[in-house]
Every structure is written in structure tokens, then in C-alpha cells.
Image (cartoon, rainbow, N blue to C red; front, side, top):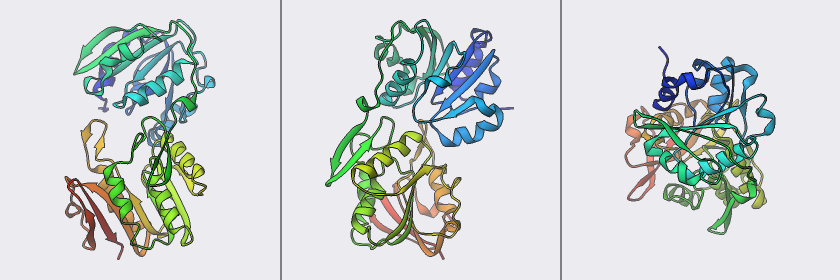
Amino acid sequence: MFYLTKTSKIILKNQNLFKDKNIIFAGNIIDKIPIYLKTIDSIVYTKKYSYWNNMKKYLKNKIFLNFIFYKKYIFKCDTLIYFWPKNKLEAIFEFKNITSLLPIGFNIFIVGENKTGVKSSKKILKNIIKIKKIDNARNCILNYGIIEKKIRFKISDFLNIYVWNNIKIASLPGVFGFNKIDKGSELLISTFRNNFIKGNVLDIGCGNGILSTSILLQNHKLIKNILLIDDNLTSIVSSKNTLKINNLKGIVFPSNIYSNIKYKNFFDLIVSNPPVHIGLRLNFKIITKIIKYSKYYLKFKGELRIVVNKSFSCKRIPFKNFSILKQNEKFIVYQIINQ
């Protein structure tokens, strides 16, 4: 028995629509629907390193990892199945990128959970396609349309650059902290000022790079190496841009938590402001993994400094050596020493 999300189940329910099509799968796709849906042929485009890494053994050279879509991915495809994400700006950015490269008359299917705001796609995309509803089940919607006119897409139209605390921050839609720094990151950064940070640093879930940028600006002479990782390629690009516009250097690459980290017992400090949601649902799996496996990557007496929502407590994890560095009404900064 295989796991499928509610959005994939509504696709499978309407599988007769796709059996004679050459499909591009894109958007917020997180399961194995591309290998179960019967089509003439299928390719997958994703920005998620973990999804690409898990699916490449099934799809071989038919899954592509990048932060934007390129024309070379289209091949002989005639239909797009787009999984609508919960972030509306991310959907617009990604959808315009893809459809700018597709010909007029190309088939478009849009699927998403009602809670993601997929109902608004009809209004948001009205200048690109006319959408009609095909199905509505499991609190999900499946819409259909065809491309009616060509549009232009420029990354620069979507790149947001703002200033916080004299730091320039570059961010693309869908990246955490796109418009402003969140209160959790702000609280965590406040602990950098009175604590000397030196040696080798790992920033997990780097987003727009604000944590590493703050560390480098305050402690750059003491830092040997700083590595920034994220599962999302859009975050990787955003972090690189943030470092660049602040004239800083770091090693930025994709990794699903520690999956792509080769250095064991190497880091003096690991920092993170991890998500407490997977999709639309509260989930502490990422936080738990960051804490649980940090001991394999930290030096002896190395430190994990992590900010979490107060709904999560480090008492859930079997670590004795943790303390609270700082907290406010919503967030706690935990310090965990590797011993």
C-alpha cells in the first residue's frame, strides 16, 4: 500500500483525463503520484532537494531539481499538473515561470487543498488561463484550463530586497522571511551579540540567510567555515544573494537536514530556526531530527542553538544538557551542549 496525499488522490480519481497525455508535474508535490498515474510519459520538476533525492531512483533522468523551470524540461509534454502551495506569492512566481515557457493551447490542471487558497487561482491567473472546476473532493479542488496568451517572466520582478538592522536581505517568494524578519529569528539573532561565536558553523534551514549573515557581521574574524543548508532551492538562491549583497562569503548548498553533510564531529555551533509545520499541519519531526542527530555533527562541547515555538519543549528529546538562553511570549531559544 502506498501513501498518497489528498491532492494526489483526486488526480488518481480522474486518471482517465491523463492516460493519453505527456505530463509535467510541478509545484508542491510531495508523494509518488508521478509513478502511479498512467500516462504516455511523465517528467517532474521540483525545488525540493529531499523530494528529488527520494524520487530519482524511480524516475531516473525524468526528474529535475532547480529553483526555476527551464524550457529544456518540456520535451514532448502537452499537459501540466500543478500542485498549488500554501503560499500565494510562491504559486504566482512558480506558475508564471513555468507557463511563460509553454505554448498557447497547452493543457493546465491545478490541484490543491482548499486551505491553501487554491480557489483564488481562478482570479489570480485570469490573465493567463481561464479556469473551470473539474472535481471537488476530500476538501480539494481540481481545476482545468489552457494557456491563452504568452506572458513574460523575469526573476528580478519577484526578488524582494529589504533592510533590517542595517543588514540587506534578499528573498524570493516562498522563502521564510520573504517580507520581513520573523520574531523567532530576531530572538535567536539577539543571542549572538553577547556570545562569542567562532570556529565552524552550520546553519540548518537557512531560508534567506539572515542567521548566517548576522553571525558573520558580528564575528567574521572568528569564523573558520560557515555552511548554509536548506531543502528548498529557492532558499539556497536567496541565501547566496543575501551573502553577496552584504559582501560576505559562505558555503551554501542543498541538504535535507543532515542528509548532505559529510563532516562528522566538525561543527562548533549549529544554529536553526526550523519550521513547526509540514505543509498545513503542525509537525515537530524536523525539530526533533535536528536536535537528536546534532551529536553526530557537533564537536565535543559543541553547541546547538535553536529557536522554537513555545508549543515545543526540549523535554521531548532525551538530552540532559540543555538550557534556555532567551524567550519571549511566543518563542524559546534553547542551547544544547554536546557532551
